[in-house]
Image (cartoon, rainbow, N blue to C red; front, side):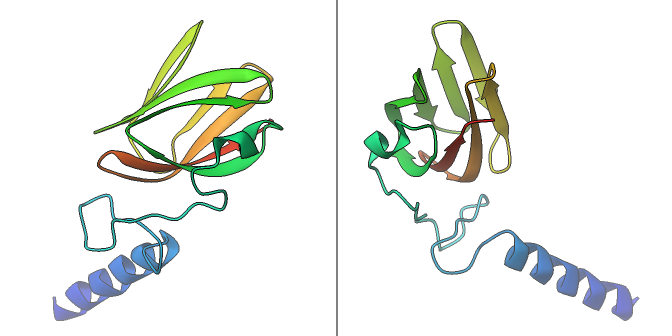
Amino acid sequence: MLRSKGAGFVVAGLVLAVGGCGSGGTHEDGGSNATAEAADGDDFAACSDGACEVLVTSTADITANGVTVHVSVDDSVTFRTPGTITNLGGRGGVAQFGFDLKVKVVAHHGKTAVLEFAVP
């Protein structure tokens, strides 16, 4: 039985390491490292070509590859376009807007999320 507990700790440690909870990562469970970093910071203009990684706090309007997306971050991450509303529960979720754009939730904690925009 002790062996199982030890293996559980090793697996949990691997999950944390793979999940990016090191420097600049986030903990979805409210851990102490709640500040995330994004390659393009909060420079939403970097998304104009459809490829960026940005930090959104609360709300933002982001235009990427010609698609304007209203993003709301709270307990979940909500993406809204004129014809679509997508609500994702957290890290790892992907929203796709036709053949023009997809957005991945890289990290999420409270009212802050790191989002990766890409052309599919």
